[in-house]
Length: 267
Image (cartoon, rainbow, N blue to C red; front, side):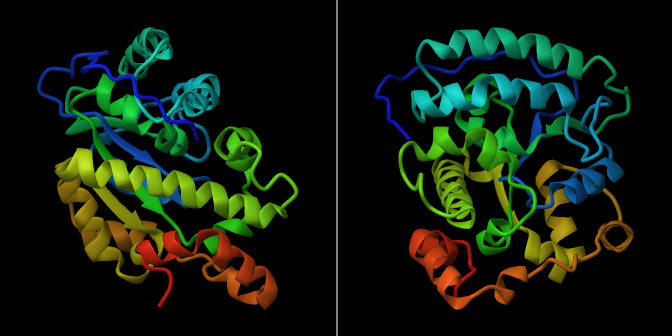
């Protein structure tokens, strides 16, 4: 992705609803399993909207991603430049609609739209109250997922001319590594205590503990063990990459080895 040296100050698009903290945003690369996170936070009173698709993504925020992700990614990694004002104007209307049905007893507000990960720097500039949950799953599993929608929609914007002749699994993990690394860099250095990274594998392996971390991060309350027991079912696809040919896996490691190691997927 291209870099830009232009900077800009904070741009508050929409004041937070009185007495309701937010936004609490959940994002990830495609197929990570964010639907279960949406169910977990909704159970504890986080308002994520009423206009949701079957994956519990906020529909209007998804349309917003359709309109802006490629242009934002192609324009550079800063939430600045000529796109910024147009993105903000569009977002005002989207969030006004999203919050129209906010209940009086909501503990906090936000949304789950996986592609929010591509716009993280803009969200932070536009919405100073942002708390961002970065959900991540082993990129090797992701490379063989049937869900390659993000690669199809945004692969060219992320990768440019790189890997045009590569197999789908290699291009998929390349998008995974670049987008997750950029989000992690920004979260760790800029958002800091407003950033939480959660691995899908930890949610499956230590469900109660991981749900409790999510609750505490978003300021939610609830019986983490009970919610975890009700909502979390480790899928059969966990570790599916291990069934693939060694040569194919070696190619994935060459493409994304540093990121796999960084996120705890290499011993």
